[in-house]
Image (cartoon, rainbow, N blue to C red; front, side, top):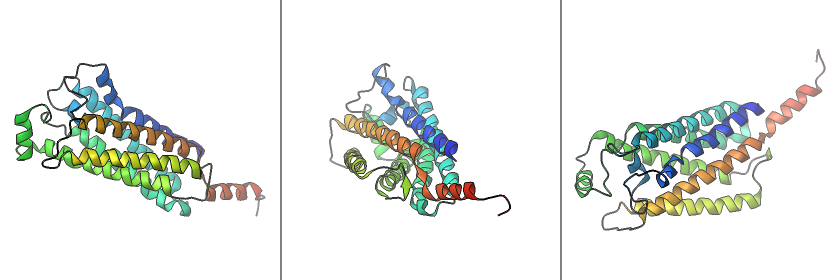
Length: 240
């Protein structure tokens, strides 16, 4: 049981690292401005190193999906973890949507190409471009709810997150949510945000940080029911 939990937590950490592959834009000539462009545009068709950035999303999505499924198998008989089971289902959904993101790249870069922006606004872009918007929405929604559950749910467990740590992580989650709302608001008609790219990148950095901390907590946690059952088995005599 402990090994399965650590496999799940390790995959969460690995997924967080793969989800940060966009940081390679600091080292590679991407032709996009981090100040104004969306991270998804790094993997748009025709962009240099697009395959690398899409592969990072694919590996991140697969890691998160498997991490969520392993956690669900581990917690399937732990009644007090029923809310966490929903959180891990959402984590798996986030992973699947992230994989779909990588398989449905944007057809052009709207923040750099006015013609692309006009086609996007009138829905005259390939279905993969439109699907990318949908899968991104599913991914961020699933992850946000999963974060909320894992950060705030009080559980009868050992080695879980303390109250002080929950307050700090809660503040980070509120900041993450605020940056996400600001990023989404940039899509509204009449809204102009010159630093939209930086805002989204800040939100993605917080995403990785929260995933890492929650994965570390999950690594050291243990459902109380499982501990009690194990203790009872040790105390049983043969033939009882």
